[in-house]
Length: 175
Ligand SMILES: Nc1ncnc2c1ncn2[C@@H]1O[C@H](COP(=O)(O)OP(=O)(O)OP(=O)(O)O)[C@@H](O)[C@H]1O
Ligand SMILES: Nc1nc2c(c(=O)[nH]1)N=C(CO)CN2
Image 1: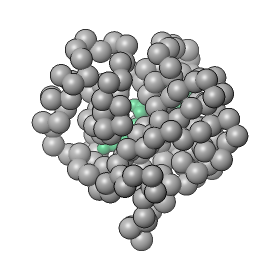
Image 2: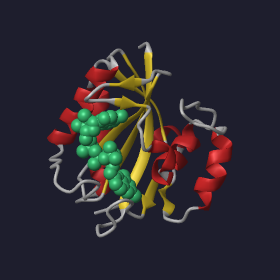
Image 3: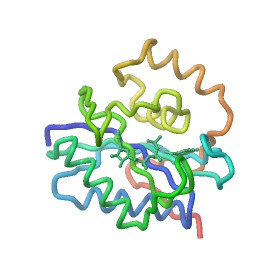
Image 4: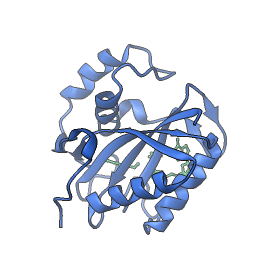
């Protein structure tokens, strides 16, 4: 599998843990996608549109034979399968899948922008990403990632909810 991508997951409707677990399952059931790593799960205050419930957020690393467009289509299809409805911008969602990086490519089409244009300012993305790849280089970053992290980690609103536990993954703890 020649391509490496980092994907951010977020959920703040229904059983947030199950939504994320199911999204990972659907993605990795795809014969062209292999899960390489996943972060801990964080509970985060909503950003952008604040009058909504707390999110769970995490980041996964995958390897894939899909190209970036095919991966986006797979992510959008997975969101739909899990009942995602697009209503309020930055509003509540059963599952959100954002492609953060795809190899070291810069992509700018009508459907897809990579690296994700808002990732660097989002602690709910950068903290889990940094956890699984502190050395990642993201084009557009003006400072080393470690320097960006000092500022982001000072921000409130991102708390560990379920620590990553080695190879085994996570136990469901939310009913
Ligand atoms: N890197 C990317 N990852 C996922 N979707 C992207 C990306 N770049 C552009 N898009 C486009 O964004 C569209 C809308 O995505 P979505 O509704 O999930 O936005 P959002 O999550 O509300 O906001 P944000 O983009 O700020 O996270 C998708 O249909 C997709 O075509
Ligand atoms: N904490 C948090 N806030 C958000 C999130 C998210 O995943 N987590 N997603 C948004 C739209 O992409 C808008 N705001």
